[in-house]
Image 1 (cartoon, rainbow, N blue to C red):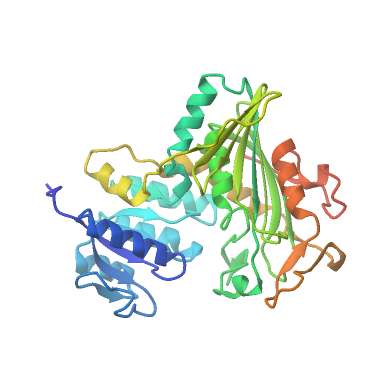
Image 2 (image 1 turned 90 degrees about the vertical axis):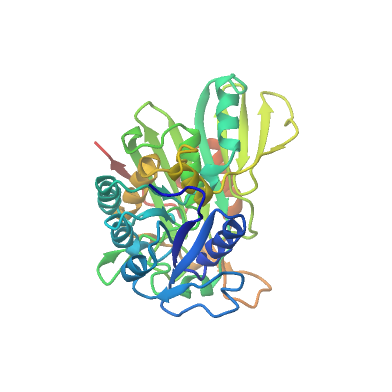
Amino acid sequence: MRDLRVPWPVVLAGARGHGAWHLENIRRLEHAGRVRLVGVCELRPLDDEELAGFGPVRQSADFAGLLDSTGAAVAVVCTPIPTHTALALAAAVRGVHLLLEKPPAPSYEEFRRMADGAAAAGTTVQIGFQSLGSHAIPAIRRLIAEGAIGEVTGVGGAGAWVRDEAYFRRAPWAGRRRLDGVDVVDGVLTNPLAHAVATALALADATAAEDVSTVETELFRANAIESDDTSCVRVRTAGGGRITVAATLCAHTSGEPYVVVHGSRGRITFWYRQDRVEVRGEGAGPAPATLHGRTDLLENLVDHLAGRAALLVPPAATGAFMRVVEAVRTAPDPVALPAPVWSPAPGESADRRVVHGIDGLVALAADTLCLYSELGADWARPAPTTFTTR
């Protein structure tokens, strides 16, 4: 039996880009005596400055070989989306537990292959939706149960971000729906603003795959890419609930994404990156916003492995999100928005495109639970594509 007082040996696959955040988090937990970085899997090895503060760390582009040579107990995978399933299964067959960055897979079939393979091997997988570690989520659920906003009538989500052309050139798979015949599905709602979708589903109590009945999609792109950068989806749950999430990477001004729970007597707004919650009763102004803590998902994973905590984001808790990914994957390719609908961002040296009026439209979709085509956007044609799970 493993000595639970000894830090858990960890291998990190993908240590640059967003992976740099994981590297810093592992450094924090190593200093706290919780984990120990024993290996880094990167195509280009990290230099001494990037590894400052760590002890001896093996480096290799061979993930499986690195797991074997280091004796890792846990792996953190933050690599291109199409590699997730293969790397997760390589860890599983070696008995290595996993923190797998979102989205967990580019298709529902790959997701099931990953989750079923890990379960068969007896390994634990935590999916990296950090917002689902927020203590605001159970607090909001308590407010709903106490009747703070009456009967829930739906959940909306909104994300308005700005990204320039360089963002879509950061990697060969960026901005792609598929690459070399392999699914990627790097759309605005499936990757950069995937947390808005996953968090909205969580607050609607619709996280399992079987909770989803239909998914309507409207996918558009202003940039010269293959995937969507301005989209919305509406999920109908098996219990009759509605969840609408709208997002863009072509906003005029970048804003904090949020999820709003609509009730018969008010609403609750959750800015999930800030762990900030605001309750507004019917006919009243908002109550003072409350700030909540957050449990780190790697820390939760090692606590779970030590028998001290329930796992926060197992694969089963992301089944509904993967139904949305599958709906986006199987939908017709995103509609290219004509030039009159967008323009270059004024006064900026970087090449960035702005969809006219999209900031307000994203907010309106979350407010009304309507799709772009239902809100009078002339460019939002044709009608939405509906994906049915049954």
